[in-house]
Every structure is written in C-alpha cells, then in structure tokens.
Length: 306
Image (tube, rainbow, N blue to C red; front, side, top):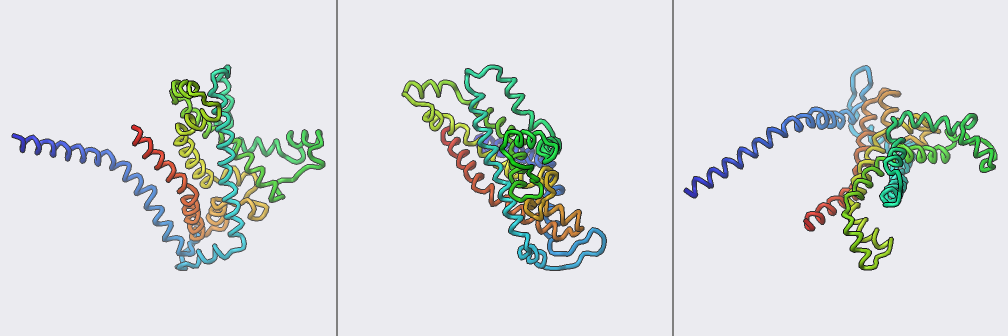
C-alpha cells in the first residue's frame, strides 16, 4: 500500500513538472527566436564586413582590432561611462523625493506624486525637445534668465562644447528618468510596517539611526533593482543623447549605442555595428554585475529572515 502511495506521488510530481515545462515552452520559444538566434547571428556577423547591400566578406577579428585601435574608441567608452553615471544623480534625487513624500506631515501626497511623475510620463523625445528649447543659446528661457541675473556673461552654445554637452545630457537624462526610481523606492518605503519605527523611537533612535537600521535594509533591494534597470536602459537607449547632440561634437557624447547606430544606419556596415553592440553587452554586464551580486545577497538574506 505504501509503495502504491509513493508511486502515485511520483507520478503526480512528474505530471506537475511536465505541466510547468509546457507552460514555459512559449516563453522559451520567444527567447530563442527573438533573443538568442539574433544574438548568435550578430556574433557571426561581427566577424564580417557586412554591407547593407552586397555580399558579406569574412574578416575574422579585423573589426575588433579596428574598433579598439580607433582614435575615437576610448572617447566613446568615456562618454558611455559618464552617461551611465547619470543613474547616480537619478538615485539621489529619487531617494530624497521618496523619503520626503513618505513623511506623515506632507499634505496632498497624491498631487505631489503626480507632479513628480510628470517627466517620466512624457516620451523621452518630448522631454528632450522641451529642454532643447529651454536651453537654446539664443531663444531659450533658461539662457535668458541666466544672462539676466548675471550667472552667464554670454550665451553658451553647449552643443559645440564637449564639457557643456555632457552636462546637458546628464541634466536632461536625470530629470527625465528619476521618477522611475522614485516610484520603486516609494513603493518599498510604504511597505515598511510603522511598528518598526515606533520600536526604534522607544529605543531612542534618532533620524539617521532610524534610516540606517530600519529604512535602508528594507529598501536596499528596491534600490538595487532600480539601479540595475536604469543602467541597462541608459546604455541601450540613444534617443535623448542623439536628439540633443547627435553624438557630437566629434565623438565626445557618442555612447556605444550611438556608435552602433552610426555604423549600422549611417555607414551601412552591420558587421562593425554588431561588433560595437557586443562591446556594449559586455560593458553593460560589467557595470551591473556588482549590483546583481548585491541583489542576490539581499535575496538570500531575506530568505534567511523568512
């Protein structure tokens, strides 16, 4: 009787396993046909000179050698790193805003939340166009008031100045995307039981101690998640940087994604475009790997607490 019962349990487990596999098949097929096959094809194309029209020509590692020895390569890597660091500015703004809005004494929280989400509710191209108008050296409102109050002595043609161009891209990207991180952090803050703060007050914890002991451990996972997503999105998107500066002057604001676009659609060299794309994948992984390890450690710690 016991043998039959054990056999029945094994059959039930096998049926459950096959049912899970059956449900996963559509997702697996989606990943294979829309992700892995194009990715492997891109690796193959990176070893060729692959024109938009014409026959591809095998080059071996020539594309990789040409890329890393090009004069602009390290300029592009530097621009990509700087642009990815806009995530830090977004995090600081989002954390301050979320902590402020989570306070009990703040009135009209729904209204303030809606106002804070407005930049993210608009398409990035729209926000880019708005800032291009505001910062226009001749007609922009921001330029007008900076000149009026003596902060600037003359208009700044930021699109032709490498330093100013980088600062403008950082400003626009931070203003556009910080609400995404704000929303994730605020949701995590609101999930913390109020009793934790009451207990901390009983033990005489000050504001900083309450943040360090109660708040930060509970929102660390949300912060890591938001940072990972934003770094990946920053490196993959080209709309705002390309709209604001076109990657110029020269290659000073050309991130790897813009360089990929230039090779693919302006030069028609898809082999080199995929070569740059593979560098972009590797660069993205290197940047998010420490945060992924931190997130995994956070999950393991939460599992032990559970």
